[in-house]
Image 1 (tube, helix red, strand yellow):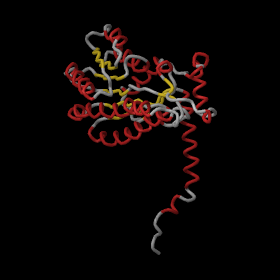
Image 2 (spheres, one colour):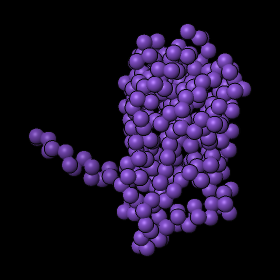
Image 3 (cartoon, rainbow, N blue to C red):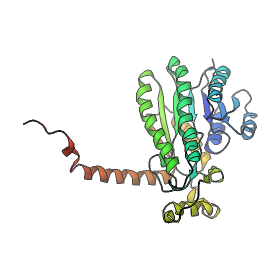
Image 4 (cartoon, rainbow, N blue to C red):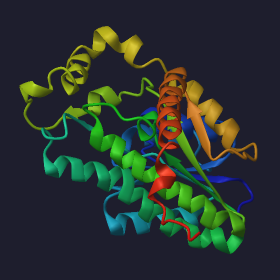
Length: 284
């Protein structure tokens, strides 16, 4: 078994997943690059024939998930970092979106991540070593109109990961949430609207629709993040024996999450006035 750290990164064909894989390989670590589109991954892996393995996989397919974990462990002997990065998004108001689309969002963003970490954990537990890295989003903390199902899938991943780190830390493992802001990863070209527009939502989710329709003009505003820099920071944080359970990436993520924290604090403080009144009365 190799002593070099081994990473398995899903969604490695483009965006932050691809840039993270590239940076990790450049740092001398081993990487299993996993995604449906193999072309860009093969080009990267060709530069690192001894330390890179490309696996074409649909993460929603149970047999392909099992094969992915098996091939990673057969090639490198272990998985030290599982990075659940694969993700999709459909935009539109809750009432507008098609059921088949929002169910697919959960299949990729949540259920696939759950099943992959469940497959990776036995090997990690046996070695008492390993880290699960679940790629959430600032949308997993603070939702926006027009992006409810993506946010809901990331909220679910956040809740799951909070439980996960409490379950696995006693056996020497780690679980980390990554909460990026908007990075220029090409996701704008892969994100589609679902369903038919309803005029009553023009002033809420309709604003999102118009922004994405003019994404070329607004690109610098909507996507302030550089994924290559994010990959460098993420690698540094994940390999420096982190104590944090959450890693926030991007100035826009910091602003949006801070606003959510302020709103939550205000509601929490207001609830102090009546929350305890719902308890059973104590006997005098």
